[in-house]
Image 1 (cartoon, one colour):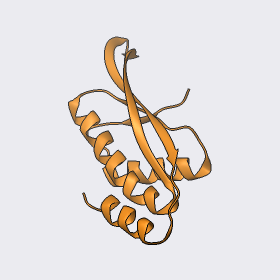
Image 2 (spheres, helix red, strand yellow):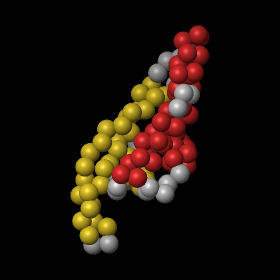
Image 3 (tube, rainbow, N blue to C red):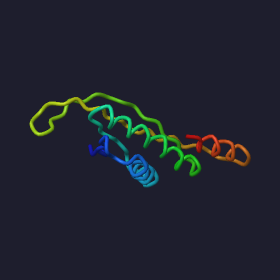
Length: 105
């Protein structure tokens, strides 16, 4: 399984664009983060990606898990976020309300 590797220096907007593009292409999205700063950037990216996706009829959520990984021969604990895609139907005034709510950060 491939992972988007998010670091504390990752741009949340760039990660969000990658998430949204993968969701629109039907590609499974999984992120891997090591450290609190990386998890923070990944969660910000999820919030931004929701704003990109909700007007197109998709919503996303994530499920976190712990994973032991090796980095330069050293064992570290990573948090992996599996992105779950939800299709939503947007109709008339309801679509405007959902879209407006999604854009609040």
